[in-house]
Length: 214
Image 1 (cartoon, rainbow, N blue to C red):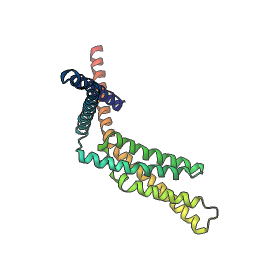
Image 2: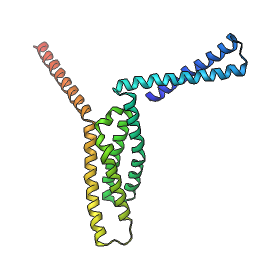
Image 3: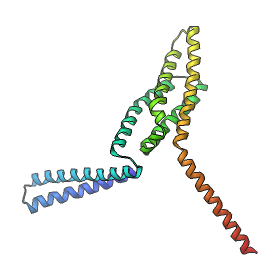
Image 4: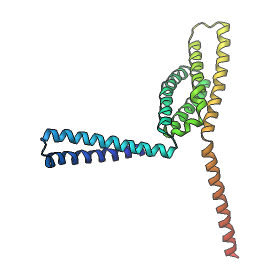
C-alpha cells in the first residue's frame, strides 16, 4: 500500500512537471507544439526519477543502509528467488501426505524469510546463514530426494539414500525455522517490552482505583 501511494505521488509530481515544462516551452520560449510536448515528457521523466531517488534515499536512511549495501542485498534476493521456485517444484513433487505437511511448513518458512527481507532489507543481516548456506543446501537436498523418489525401481541403496536424504531435509527445515526466529528476535524483544510496560500501567491503574474506592 505504501509503495502504491509513493508511486502515485511520484506520478502526480511528474505529470505536473511535464505540463508545466510544456507550457513554459510553448508560451515562454515560443517553441513549436511538438517540441514543447517533447520537453514536457523530458521534464516529467526527470521529475519522476528525481522523486524516486529522493524517496529511495529516505527509505535507505530509515533502514540504516547505504546504497552499496542495498544493492548487495537486492542482488542476493534476486539470486534467491529462482532457488525458492526450484525448492517449491521439488517439494510439490513429493506426494506423501505425511511429508506434504512438513514440506509446506518448510516452504512457508522460506517464503516468510524472503518476504521479510524484501520488505525490510536490513533484516538480511539477521538471516545471512539462510541466504549463504541453508537455502542452497535445502534446494540441493529436495531436488535429490524428488529425483530418487520418482524412480520406478529402487535398489536397497536407493531406499537407504532416500531415508537419509529425507532425514537431512527435515533437519535443514528446522535450521531454516531457526533462521526465521533469529530474524524475528528483535520484534519479540520489542513486543515483550511493550507487554511489560502495559502490565505495569494496568497494575498502576488498578492501585489508583483501589485508593479512590477507599
